[in-house]
Image 1 (cartoon, rainbow, N blue to C red):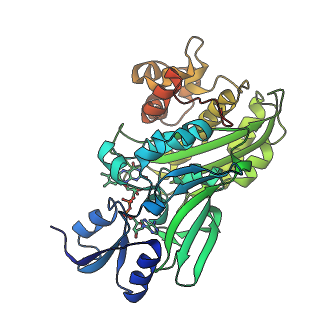
Image 2: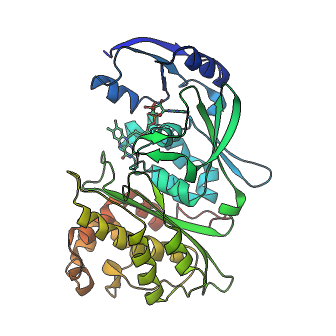
Length: 361
Ligand SMILES: Cc1cc2nc3c(=O)[nH]c(=O)nc-3n(C[C@H](O)[C@H](O)[C@H](O)COP(=O)(O)OP(=O)(O)OC[C@H]3O[C@@H](n4cnc5c(N)ncnc54)[C@H](O)[C@@H]3O)c2cc1C
């Protein structure tokens, strides 16, 4: 049993806004995978809830006529991963949300809840930063659109007002056409694990695939809020895809744009190692997905016969954890475990599921 005063099933987004506006102590609930855990822990107990769980108007993924993609805030992770539109145009997002919790959580949890709870560890957030998602909110004063870069204001805090409901996310065609990306989550186990660190990289290559025309880098858990690394991106623009020096400059700049903390999950120092290493790996992967030659072969992948897809395999990755390049890392766990954290993504990569015939492929 949960200690709540009442639960009101909203009939529409407008109805939810009205109900929230009438009760300043009410909390909005969608999938409930964060709200109910908090209530069970006694936080916010005894409050009324306004539910948007049943609202079909905020569910689903839609490719619009102009090529933009609209993702309803009430869309569950499993629906995003299985959406043909996502698989064809933004496979990276489907992979990122496929790393959340376990199957039950992915069936209930929504992307709206993931972004609106304000957590830096949200697995969709860094990818949404690299997609430059726009967040469409409806409140008592009407609708407003907030770029994701302006949405987070502190740990667990966003610019969303109490009576505002997130309706959908808009991904512009400009952030889809020609872009390819990879999200890597580092966690201490394969499932039911909040990210120790998450890294998202998207790249756009020149037509001959030799130059990085554009790049976006964002992290989760590298700062109190998800963070985009603009200085690092600027360094890589126009450089060759296989320029190792450029990659190291990129990583060095990224380290100046983050501010990780020590927690029971990991020390600040370990997170800094992850910030550097995951950026190298996600970048190399993104370049390869885009059809380019990466500044190879970094860390685990440097080992001659190892294909990147072998990273999915714990044993093969561990086997290279003793390689010279991994020796230079403060914690060999990075090499041994990172691959396992993105197992599902790598499985799809191996089976070709990830690559659709669309604009992102
Ligand atoms: C066992 C377990 C494992 C988990 N593992 C992960 C993980 O690996 N990675 C990860 O990122 N998360 C994880 N989570 C957290 C959680 O599942 C996600 O954050 C999920 O996306 C929350 O979505 P929801 O619909 O359940 O949100 P809810 O719990 O319904 O709401 C969360 C917050 O967002 C607000 N909200 C929800 N929808 C909207 C909306 N449309 N507009 C405005 N505000 C809204 C609510 O008011 C509330 O403050 C885990 C949770 C559990 C219980």
